Length: 125
Image 1 (tube, rainbow, N blue to C red):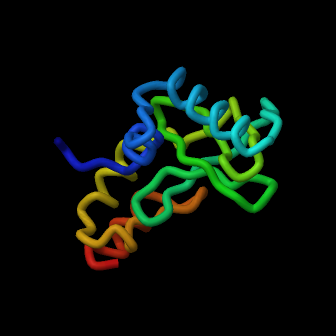
Image 2: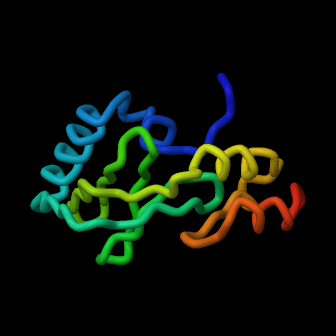
C-alpha cells in the first residue's frame, strides 16, 4: 500500500471505517456508548496536517481525523460532526512534500503555509 497522509480510513481501520458512511456509523455507536449526543455542525472548519494526519480541531479541545476525500470529521471526545471541512486547493502537493519526510513527527502543515515554504524547510524538517 502506498503511504499517504492519514485520514479516517487509515486512523480508524481497526473499527471498520472504509468510507464516510462507516465513519459516521462508528462515531454514532461510540457516542451512544459514551452517553453523548451527536451534534452536526455545518459551519466551515479548516483541516491541517499534524504528525502525518489530516485533522480538524474541535471546540471541545479534541480533534478529529479527516481527509480531502471525506471533507468531514467526527470528534470522538464530545460527539460533534463537522460537515464542512475546508482543505487547501493544493492539498495533493502538500501531501507529496510532507511524505518525502521520513519521520511522521515532521509531517506538519498549517493553514496559510505555502508549498514553497514546506519545500524550503527540506526533507529533514
